[in-house]
Image (cartoon, rainbow, N blue to C red):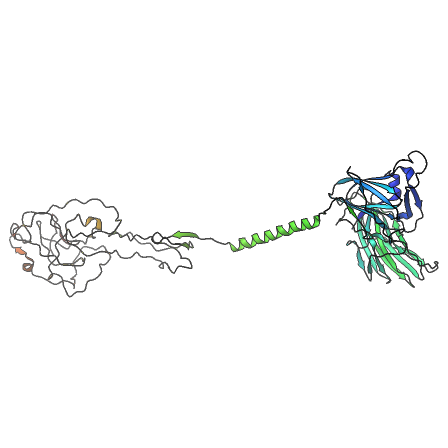
Length: 570
């Protein structure tokens, strides 16, 4: 991944290496970055002022990983401090396979927090051959004029053609950058890289063996520039040169694309690409910054016993939020409607009704007897566990229930919870005479039409009286009950029928009812009065005996009551 490289010559110039008298720079070093190495020999104090001061490397970085790259020696010893901490011994890579080789990562330091840190490196013994320091910026944006390095395995490098990726690559002279290279022996193979910066450099490995090798380098849409690396006249040596500059160019700061194409490969030659560098500008950004792997994977030292993988944490949070969103979306799709429970007052059972608007035909108010069954009626569709279904519209209330007439004082009780009704006026009977009331017989409530009714005072009947609705149950105990007609009045052979719903009737001639027969008045104890053209009872003026004292119940609806004029008789 991209990182920042600080060359040893730049470190010495910026007084990062102090005192200067204890550090010596060497040039023309094959295999070193920019062909320079800076050496600190603890066995030699040097000359001049400050030569007796202990050498140190003081570096302030805003990053997460620091690597010291150079040529290790067997007797090298160093200590370090981070942000003013106590002095700690550095664990160095001084293995036998790394001694005296270039490009070796001598020491790694993984920082715990991605903030600004001040690191001090203190050589203690032996000789330190320093090539460069590298670090990974924690913010993803390097400082202006920093040298940014891009490894051949960076995902932003796009390859085309035939390439071989070599891991843990090494040579007798040393190790390539991050120990990886990309090689090809096929002409026409290429790679490209987009970046924002200036001063581009392409580096690789070269070996003067038999054959020719050339490539073209193109910046943006400019004309390609050809470079001949070996023309076939070179001295044959089986020796690798590390960090060889294949192409360099100063560019105007901005966004650029470099394209490298292999033109010619013959003999034993091969094109080996190692890394690129460019100078950072204000628009330089790292797409995927992360600590780079140790070039030789030998040794590293961490300031903390544990490391946090920030990428894994961020990825876990994003995955959790995505799963929570999907679960919430699915729940909202399944929750469409939740019906409300309805409780039944009788059996304390609850069930759900899906409220649905129902339109029914208009039914006029019923003026007859009201009934109350103690149950509530529900309109709507029952739940799936209930088999109740409402009647289809239009809905017609059932006919009122009426019980048989009972004689006065029989203990008849109306249905529970009757509606309140006003108290009736007491009936005043005519006590002029007594009426012999036969023993009542059970009968079903009817509204019979008879040809003749007894007259209790008044003018002759002029016509049938309009039917009256039966009194409510609450008034039955208070109103006088009429004597039931004799068994001979009713047609005993006619089967009882349920009373029809009350209907308004117009005055007019009365139809003959097939349920009743003509009975002579003499059989009813009534005698006609020729003088007044009326029918009287015995003991009445012009008739039979007077009625008994007390409350004499009047006839039922459709009959005669005391003090009423039946009207002219038809």
